[in-house]
Image (cartoon, rainbow, N blue to C red; front, side, top):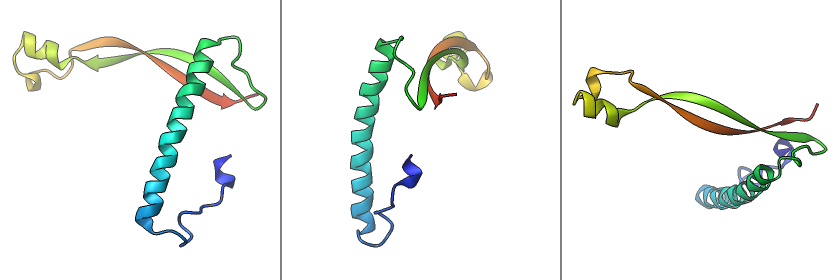
Length: 98
């Protein structure tokens, strides 16, 4: 969808600093809208399929190094690179409706 939008920032009508500030303001507004839409999707599991896209909530586990635990056990984080703990992460996936 966004590829069809005209690029009004790089066509020379606006100074680069002004264009950058304007883009950042738009991004901030879009992030607020994204958060509201995401919250609505998460709160309504039965309403996740649109006309063009469907939203899926996917849970995954990631291994991460716990540097505080390494410091507590050994004292030097650089001595050990792989003391891991599992963290559950929720990913909101939006894809084309098939």
